[in-house]
Length: 210
Image (cartoon, rainbow, N blue to C red):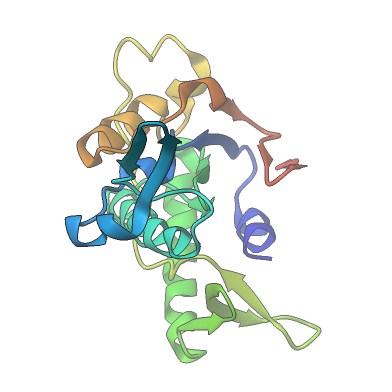
């Protein structure tokens, strides 16, 4: 629902791209006090053991711990004016607006940011946290993945990218994503990147932004 709500708000010409974090759970080391609970038996002859010192995929609490770190990374990117961005586990969907649409879209975000607190702000429902926007015709509310309080930024286009007509027309590019994520230590799996387009694939669906 949050993905649909966000896409419905986007201006014409918006593009989306996806990126996956490489070995997401493995990027988070465990405190040494937790190592004894993650000893792995490798062989009997001779008895051989190893210690798993990072979050392991499939271990229940790992998803929650990784989610906290991912959300912090998203908050920092949004605070820098990048986005809108939405994510599920380690899959990230980045939207970029035409430069000419940013001012009007930021005005809409300001209005939405005023409505959300009036409706109770964020809602924790089962495993989801979402922000309640305007009431819809069926009595439900718009469901946003953020509080829309931070304006989007028009990132300067590097000269080497200016020759690319798409990157020159849009608010940011993978160059800007990588500049921020590199400082945060977020390693992207480059082979899984999908370029910006009007039909990004996310959560197994092709989202036709037009």
